[in-house]
Each structure stands twice: as structure tokens, then as C-alpha cells.
Image (tube, rainbow, N blue to C red; front, side, top):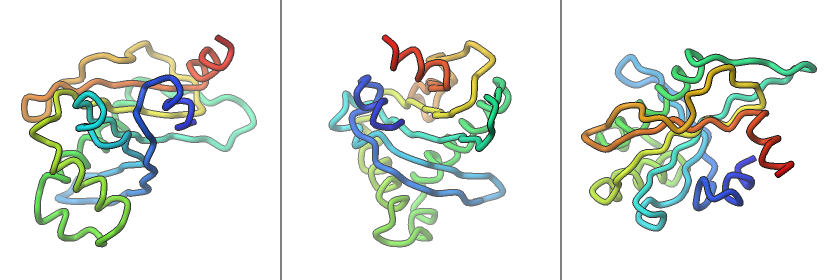
Length: 154
């Protein structure tokens, strides 16, 4: 699915990260990063996935999507803290992602939160402004089963 996002131009590249942890009472999650923002129009793209092993299509709502995006935001915010980065395993994918976020921070002009899911998203809040992190605009981008199907059949 990440390769489709690359082909569509949603992300420059898909670097897989599998990170789920708690820090300062918050859940942090990151499943991928869309490359170095300095090489992709100053856009930081971070990915979280929500996959279901069901026979029938699963539906997710705006509240569930917002929760997943919150975990991504928590990772982005934590990545800028030296103490958080020091606790990561040196050379790990999550340490690399945190390093990219920190070193590119001054050149980032937009943060794109991407949810990839094999569920059907029941709301229509895609690519909407979702606030700011330290003055940088943040958008929600949802790639659900319906959107992947539209892409594949277009």
C-alpha cells in the first residue's frame, strides 16, 4: 500500500517504521515516514496503519481516525525532545525517523499525517487542516479501502 502512495505522489518514499510506546503518559505510534522533508518540498509525511483481519469490510469513524492521528502527533512532538531520542535504540528505524524530524524541523512547512487502512472510512474529513504543531500546519490524509480502490481503477 505504501508503494501506491509513492506512485500517487502522496509521499516521496516509504520508509517503514514499527514503533508503539508510551512516553509521559501518551501513546506514541509511527508505522512509516515519507522520507526526508528537505527532499520532498519541506513536507513531513508520517504514516500510521490500521489493518483488520476480517472477512467482511470493517468501518472506522472520524473518532477512531483522530485517535490514530493523535498517536502520530505524539511521536512527532516527542521526537524533538533530546531525552526521548536518547531512549531510542541507536540505529533503529524509529531513531532514524526521530533524527530526520529533528534535523529537518526548521525547514518543515507542513506536516502530513497519513492513515492507511483496509477499512472503510465513514466520514469525509480527508486532507483537512488538523491544527498546528509549533506553528506548522498539520493535515489529516486517509487512504482507506475505498480510496485505494478508486486509485487502482482510475
